[in-house]
Image (cartoon, rainbow, N blue to C red; front, side, top):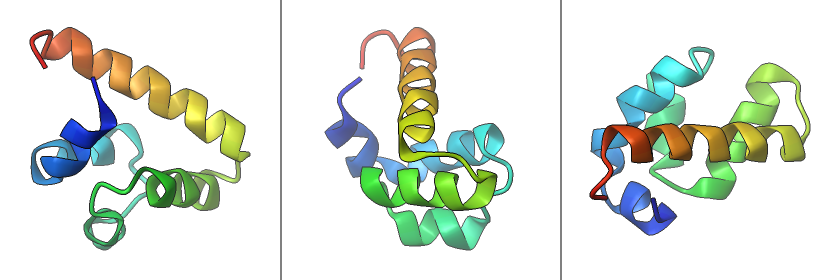
Length: 72
């Protein structure tokens, strides 16, 4: 799934992101507003991981979204 689609439809995806990264607050997700770099930064901050690890988790999350919504 292209990130632009996630960013453009963030309101549809942010609940799923919160389920995946439960340490992120609703306020965090509202401020992220679909911005990939902000999401990576917040994941790093909330979970104490490197940007590389956060990127890997984000890639896995996107792959899971593709499986749920294969036409997107």
